[in-house]
Image (tube, rainbow, N blue to C red; front, side, top):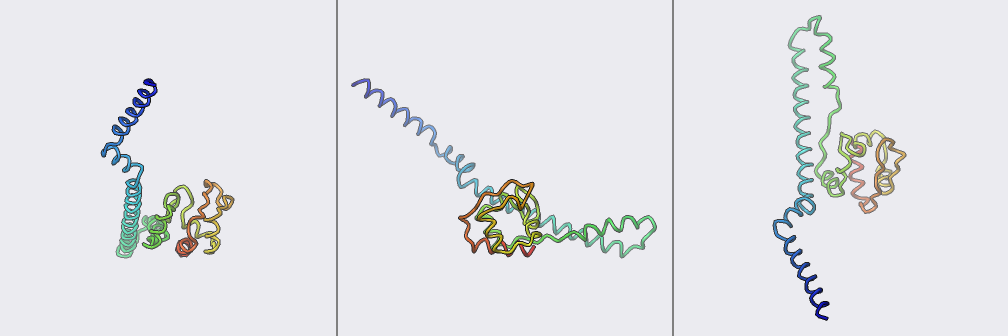
Length: 180
């Protein structure tokens, strides 16, 4: 009987010391930063920074394209510059990237869509601009979110079904996708 009591007391003491040793405020904060709510904040901050960087880059590209378009008009064209003129027109002909509206961005963050999709760039799944080229209706997009069809997107990993995403949220996102 003494052995049973001492063994159970030793086991309890071991459990308590383990709990105290691994549960310091510092350890909990580190865990939370990397795996808990801190990871969400880091992800959202990184997405916001990425979107801002892309907006700034797009604005700079538009500004540079406008300057290039104004520069050839101000200077007379020489025979050697004729090859450079089409190259200067090519960036101006690139499709303009629209920023993601705040309400749509909030929904995309809420449902973790940005984990696999971006507006104009391939991440894991296709870019929303590529989805827009397929000319799906809002109802078709709702159905594809709830029950994805991998055969529609060969070359991409299959999307997991997301039946928990409300239809109203998907319709808002789908209307934005179709506006791209």
